[in-house]
Amino acid sequence: MTSKNSNNYQTDITVVGGCGHVGLPLAIAFANKGLNVSIYDANETAVEIVKSGVMPFLEPGADIMLKKVIGDSLNVYSDPKVIIQSKYVIIIIGTPVDEYLNPDVNLFYKFISEIFEYLRDDQIIILRSTVFPGTTEWLYQYLKDSDKSIGVSFCPERIAEGKAMEELFSLPQIISAFDKKTLDAVDKLFSNLIKRRIILEPVQAELAKLFTNSWRYIQFAVANQFYMLASEYETDFYKIFDAMKDNYPRTKGFPKAGFAAGPCLFKDTMQLSAFSNNHFFLGHSAMLINEGLPNFVVQKLKEKYRLSECTIGILGMAFKADSDDNRSSLSYKLRKILLIEAKEVLCHDVYIKDDTFVSLEDTLNKSDIIILGAPHREYKVITIPAGKHIVDIWNFYKNGGLI
Image (tube, rainbow, N blue to C red; front, side, top):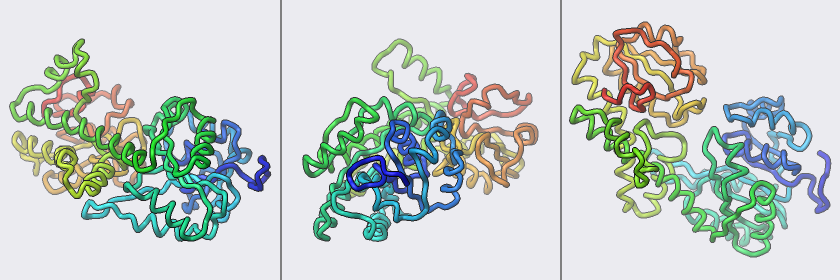
């Protein structure tokens, strides 16, 4: 590594867990702004892919930026020793929820203990992924009790997958810290990416992240609940939807119905519920609605068809459109239900490779019922054979959302 700064650090930033959907775009963005950035990731396969200048997942615009900086201002390692060489240590390790929908903070604590020997005085740790409220303060006190003079900050990631290389340079960045020295340093760091920074206390920043994702999850739940109500009455939700939104500013942010999933919205809503001692009733209701939508679709189909005699095809297995990310995708939950109810289930996705999937041609031709799981842009131009029953919750094909 070549030193580019004068503070006894060989690199400006190490992004820990930096080969994933949150860390890699951030590392690329900073490297493209001239900072010397290292990535540490325990996933050696992902490390080798990124080292070769190839994105391990879809993120428009990131592949071009990566090729410009890899091996120069951006280097990738599977050895945690690289952490000791950077002024800023940005940690992309969040708090998952367990099978009981409770936050599992032990994984975070364990991770900190594993990298502890590579932390040194005067570094600044920035937590980036969603954490359970109070985690940043725990880390600050833990390091203080361990006689480590290290600044601690929480600066939540705010991007949407597929828009990272746009939003990292356009969305205001929330920053926080426990002391002015750390806050000023973090502010200076993010000034390389964005002009507007918003200062909060660490717990406020943690809650802002959870509130944002829970808000989105609840918005989708409202749309999905209305969709179910309209469907139960055998009327087209999207005729109502279009009428509600037509030149009417108070419904401008009302989303379409659809499978609301992914690695963040559900998880963060459940974390907020745990934080409230399970008094976050809106969050619980949203979870029941959104997670129940695949079951609702199957039950409505059972009212019209003998599913045990039907082959059903699912188009799009990613958790959102135009993505190769299948984490927490409700299309997989839909498949599990249909494997019990239907004669056969065929799955296709434009971006996800899976040996159990079949070709688009076979999915279209062999299925009696076709369900659009993720509305990838490539599906817009396909020709669906006549006589097929289409379930299009998204109204992607503009034929209404009736099941």
